[in-house]
Image 1 (spheres, rainbow, N blue to C red):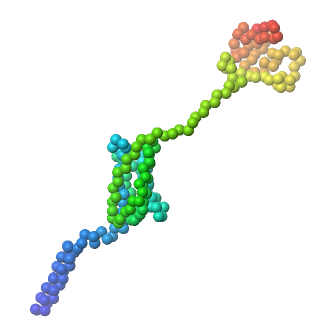
Image 2 (cartoon, rainbow, N blue to C red):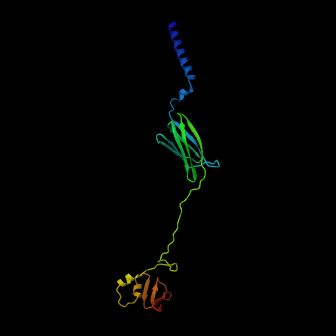
Image 3 (cartoon, rainbow, N blue to C red):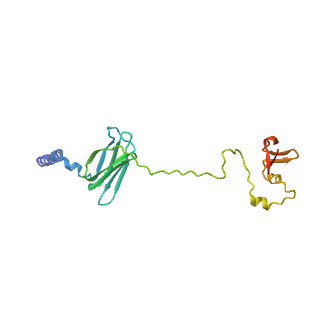
Length: 202
C-alpha cells in the first residue's frame, strides 16, 4: 500500500515539474519555428498624403530574387514570407513621381520591418515634337463634293468619233448629258458652265 502511494507521489511531482518548466521557458523557444520575415510600410507624397498604385520591389542582391507588390488606396504595402538575411534593395516607383531606392537592407528571422517611403513630384521630359505640313496638289479648298478626274492617258486611250469632250464627261456617274446640255449631280444645267477655248456653253 505504501509503495503504491510513493509511486503516485513521484509521478505527480514529475508532472508538476514539467508544467513549471514550460511556464518559465524562454520566449525565444516559442519562436524557433519562424524562418521567414516580412516588409510593411506606406508610400506618401511630399505633403504626407497616401500614394496609391506605387510599385514596390524588394530584391535580394545575392540571388536576384524579387518580391513585388502595389500600394493600396491608403498607400500601404506589405510583403510576407521573405528570406532572412540580405542585403536587399528596395525600389519604389510611380508615374509622375521621382523613384526612391534604398540599399543594404537586412532582415532577421521573424522580423517585420516597417518603412515609410516619400515620393516627390517630378517633371516628365517629353521628346521634341516636329510637325510638318505639306500641301496636297490634288486638294483645293474651293472644290467641294465628289470629283472624277479624267487624265490625259485615259483620254488618249478612249475612242471618240465626234471628238466631243462631253463624251469624256460621261465617264463620271454624276454627269448626265442630253440635248439641253450637261448636268452634274442632278443640278440645273445653268449652274454647270462649260468652257471650250474662248467660248462658254451651258
